[in-house]
Image 1 (spheres, rainbow over the protein chains, first blue to last red):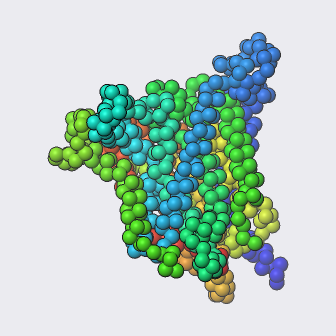
Image 2 (image 1 turned 180 degrees about the vertical axis):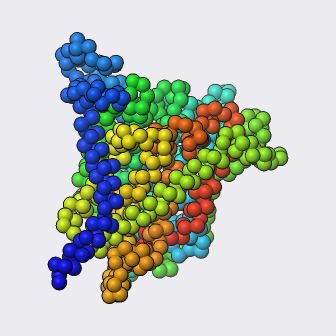
Image 3 (image 1 turned 180 degrees about the horizontal axis):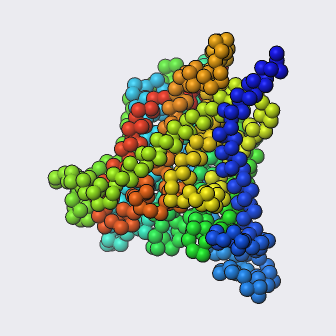
Length: 336
Length: 276
């Protein structure tokens, strides 16, 4: 009886699990292995007989190698275009850009989401409407809103700089009392058209979508032990003490989760980079995923080289996530 | 309790300020979309246009086959969302209710696919789909949704189904119901918050997706809204009022879907994380 029951549920179960299993094998597991394999190959994606095993040459070109191997490769007359012992400068630039963006944007969004959740975690009137308002930018974030933001940060006519210029005019008489010339010498930032300001502008744009994580924090706040809180109230703990010693420790799992997923997501962002890239930024918004895209899908279609970049990115994400989880024992509060 | 929930007025004011901050970009967009083109390229700018140029919306839609793009995106998003909800609910049900050999391995696979970066899989997937001759079709955008619909959605259904009592399954089994009937007639009607959340996330993902259409679609009649907007940005950049008007039109379907199902999201998050 039991064996028959098991067999029955097993048979039916495999039918239900099948689409997911097939999808995961064909679209995730195999591509993962292919991606690693491709990074050791040279292929332009046209003719399958043209595939060439190049061992670690892609990685050497990417990361740079010791002086000897670099000259050896040149003698071999390989097809790599920018082979230098220091590695691919554009790759390093793009990795740096992505890292700077992720390191600032992910924690900022986490903080904003946490503050919003703390504000929303009350039996307030219209709290449902506020929650919807806060979550809305997350679903609206896409090409359309990026284009709207690019107008908002337009250096000449955009609302941000227009407001700044008005503020300068307004402050001018006061500044003039202390500094000769007043605000005449003050300039407005070029935002997305300047190398220095494009990343701060983008971090602001990204912060607009922070509400996406609010529900994670709200759920975590609901898990905050009401007995502990009541006990602390009876013991006369004030709001600051209660936040630091009761609420915050119980939020640490949500903080860890939001930080790690935020870091992984921002490191992989493509749309900002593709849509807002312009020459004036001097490659300031060239993110690593855009560079992968260019290597793979623009001539000379270097699929193997692009895969090598993707593998390096994967490794960095893995190291970043694992080290965050590794330190979590020290600061994340897990319920026993 | 009184100490904690004091000063609701302050909270209202802070929340209103936050909401205003979030709404400003949209307000600016509406103002620009309703301005004549001369008005937006002047200084000092006039954020309240003297007269509303409602014809901007008409022009924005007419300049490119924008309604065609909207239709394309709608078709893709609806078919893909249907597949994602269905197949991820099936897998979620299997994980929550069934046992089979190598289930532990499958759980491991699910958790692993949650953390594998999507960008890593892009090139091999492109090679696969192009060798199948699927480039310039919607298949690369739709078929993956019908094959599990994303690890996160499977995980969400699994966790939600766990909170539903097995007594319902047993009652249905006594009546001779198969797993398929239990899932579609018993469990899914009780899991409306999860269905709504997965449907919203999936619809938004497919509507907003830019990178995959960019890689797979080259004929501009097959373009999605996201690609159409990019085309607008590249060709009509000096008519910013029209670009912004088109952007606003592109946001309407997402807004409608969101407002229809948003009250379910909180319920879904609460149910899954409830520790009782």
